[in-house]
Length: 333
Image (cartoon, rainbow, N blue to C red; front, side, top):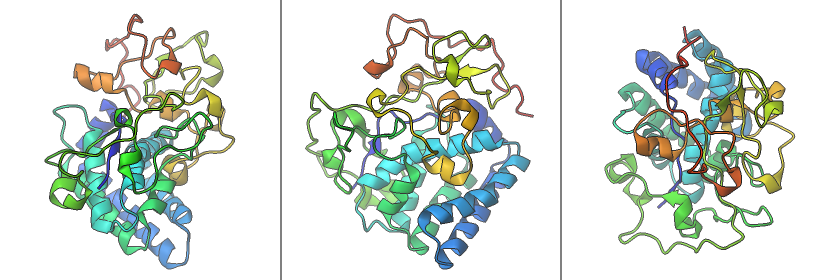
């Protein structure tokens, strides 16, 4: 039994289009990465080292397919933030088939409404879970490698006032109801791994205590060619080829501070962007849209500088820019 984080990162449309144009090629790249990961584990590597070997193999292939290293790293962090919590809340003895189903449902839940994951990619996600199980990786070990650590601003689950994790491994009922959601009723967990589905009637979730700190929703950073908006010190190039992007000033858990080293699956798969002032500024710049964008059925909303990050959601009175004046496909090739 398991749950997924809420809100889920939303896959950027530019990446959806890129993968949709050649799903077989991207699936083959994932297959090559899995072979490198398995070989590393058979050679005595740790899970972290095995994921690094996978990234070293996949990265150049993905770049040949048109995905820059920055986007590749960001996508790894997005997937890790979506699937890592599910594996953390699943039983420790979840097998490769269970992990594959969680991978499949996670990537499906990241897609905008009405958008389907291409078949080859969905198959590759299932195969990746199976490969991790066959390589001897435990579900909770994988979760640790997929997510940023507790206390890091990118940790995708709630923490208490002291920065300690609230959700216990293998115990989805310890996740406050406001911070998690069940797998889809018609998804891979329901069909291929039914033991991952919540019990009938759901869980008796832990209450949301006053000192709990919810993870910040993934927001699309504000385009700022001038560098004069809030958070200008964290300017990073837009991996899609557009204007420079700034990250929200108080992104993540303000009490935790910023980490000194790259963290998360994306950084296990490749280097972050040190010039950005974050472990991987693409997490915020490319880095996954808020659930509100899914509710609107449109593109990810850009966070206005007047948004209050501490509130966990954008200020309803703030303007959001959902126009398409800037071509997001610029530089995609």
